[in-house]
Length: 333
Image (cartoon, rainbow, N blue to C red; front, side):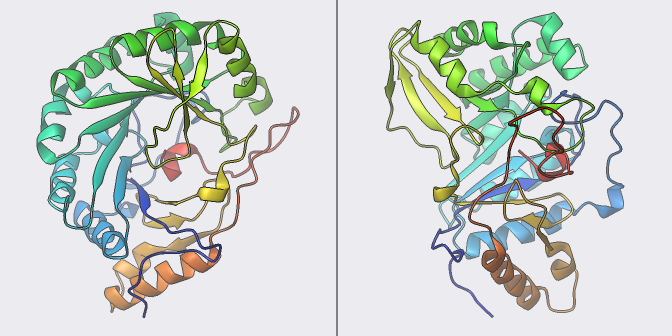
């Protein structure tokens, strides 16, 4: 039974866990899920106590950063209890506790998140236009998201905006969004759409390579490399015009797998060693088995042995099947 730090067969140390607490969401983003999603039965989802025990096992094996994800994590009832418990591990193995959210529920929870030890939240926001927001999310909730961002900043949380670049949807709006974010002291990261799950649309029709976006921006502004790192795959630039930081996550145009330090665990306790592969190991069975400590240690060792070198994402032409049939909301962002 191993008790050492998590390290895969390519020598990459795994120090970052993205932990999904629910597959449910109050939005229906067109690149993330189908409009009529069928969510998991609640009895299949790990309890908050099980999620805490699982997190503790990762921390004891060298994970220093945990990001709480979903779905939308703040739609899970009593999720603050889990966040408070994990916050108690800060400085005792855990160095950073963060959250990814669409911000629609953030007004109610921002102060409690700060009190629990969260210092930074990533907000998924793809437009500042009401009509475009409704078309992309299938909900009229932009005002709720913006109010949540206001509340987060008022509570003293650092906010980073994550924006998926989408062809024929928000390309022309990206410069204005950067100016808006930087004007409020928020970093912003652009992300290429990832081919996960059947969303009722051809991914090729959604895909906007960030190489093209960067060319647009460099025709307008001066971008210089930034030393900023947040533990994930984003590579950052400083925008001279705004003085702010802009990140690029480019799984398709510039594979970022060589330095991967992450694994994802779903709300049902399935560990996915790579976002772009279907291989998984059932940690829930280990947690609920006769010897959880032994079985969980063995499962994590097996996961490290099976973590692939790189993903297999490809959107090189129309009509391609998703790289993985599960939706992004199932795996966690």
